[in-house]
View (cartoon, rainbow, N blue to C red):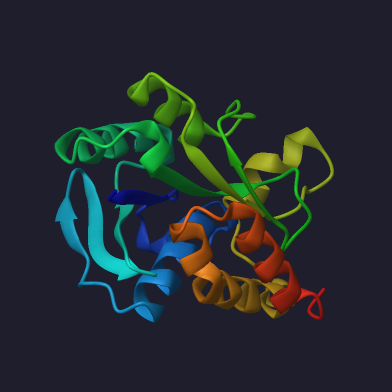
Length: 193
């Protein structure tokens, strides 16, 4: 079955290095590593197609801004007639330590506006999520500035290896082996924290 992998982020060029855009970053590295087609504009987003571990993957970066990501995802899922379980969202997660990765199916939006928009537009929450830890700034008042701030130089030593490790292990995710994917990424990044 074709899978739709969605990276959540904001389309402004000036926001490309924001912590909130780690979902875009993850898809960029995966698409490059696995020789996906060039990105082209479709479904209110940027779409690239490729094959990972024998599975057809559609990579989508909604260009609607985070709070309306679901519009792009819903259009693509509807066009390809994909059920929710064929969709995987890659997104930043404040509640995970920097560089940690967790994969789960379903659940709430946990205050993440991109997930909230997907839930609303898909009418369901049972899609897969790849939660990418960015850490928490410490207080609720600082969250907005933190997620919309750029990754700092001190974060690059875990960010770059994390994105590479996810691209290397992407075949496990494509084959429906989330536990193996998480383990593989953790093993590849254990020396960087």
